[in-house]
Image (cartoon, rainbow, N blue to C red; front, side, top):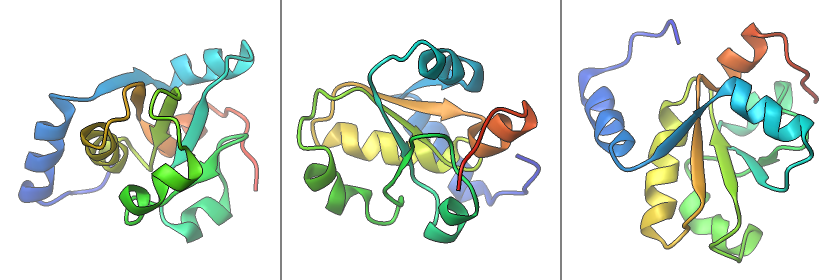
Length: 124
């Protein structure tokens, strides 16, 4: 969010976002409140996840999501919402798993920072 990211990183994120569906933090909150069935995936580092995460989120770090997604979510049609700190890493991860055949993937723009800024519930 307030970070200064390197130009090369921002370029690959912009490219990924041309192929990835994004949603707002408020959209995910509404889906959770409605009891909608989807898998919420935190792609941040393990230490970030351990410090706090969205309710019900599973952790599959961006560094291993391509390796582990098929074991943890075997059905490529499963509705997935990915999030990270601000929406950049989740867009990159969403782009990659879509290339692997996952067809119902959304990246939460704003990420953890946007979620906590709205004072939405979290868990540890």
